[in-house]
Length: 394
Image 1 (spheres, helix red, strand yellow):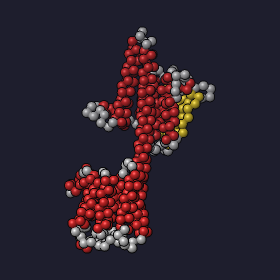
Image 2 (image 1 turned 180 degrees about the horizontal axis):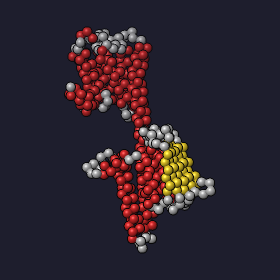
Image 3 (image 1 turned 90 degrees about the horizontal axis):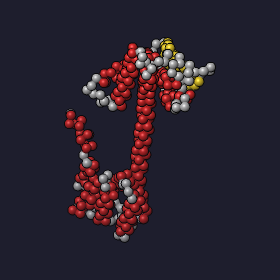
Image 4 (image 1 turned 120 degrees about the vertical axis):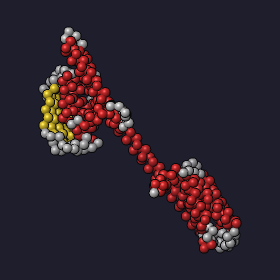
């Protein structure tokens, strides 16, 4: 049973010529059956001839080259055509004449270069064969030769049609792969922006504050401890991101355990940790959460976390020390997030800001079918709002 299961894999590993040989070998073997002799393709009126050594050679030329139909399609067609011409001119009329149609379909499908020249060359060879058969003095009408040529042209056209479909499918897959890679690069860029920007911003703010605490060793120690904790959290998040990109990353160490723990942390715990980290960086943050998170939120939970993270990062960068309010409301079908800051709280309010993070958040929320707004607040300050449908997946 195991050998039978492995047979398809072993078969696919064989050379393509070996895999194409059975068809030609089967047709060649059929030529030796007396009941099928002189009952094949008959073009022209050459009298039937008994099966002899010449018939075996013609049958071999018509059948065995089919093993080359994918590797060297034009060579296959040339050899099969020679065998077919010998078959018809000698009057064997073998059933192996159908091999010519197989060769034409394969040539139309697999021939890569000089396809038009190959078609013209085959047409010229067919015309020469038709003239030779017509000169035998039989009563075969010209229309029979034309009809048979149209049948052969149909075989070539069928192969060309299959080739066009295969090329179109390959192009579709290539574009799909490119779009998938582009989307994945965009997703990775967003994750890197969200993770690195927030933690590094907090570390910069904390380090700047520590410069003025040299006269207060206790507070200086707390500030440096906060910088260290933030750096460790940044490393943990980056390791988690690397684990997503490469499942084998961190194998054999305890790095994966930390990342898995972070991934299993409930949404409430992660938001509280995020808020507490921002507070340690010197930003007064008020946090309020209503409702109970749904059992299954899909990607909404992560997107809500990123919205709060980006808004708090902007508050640290552009409105450091200003009061910031974070409100999260869990509904049965959606998560609502609102982060407001008394200061500008937005990169658009600073000459050095790009707004890239907010644009990325808007795309994240739009993908889930939600709403996202980020704008200055009436009377001063900045507010970020997001309505994120729960239970959706990216």
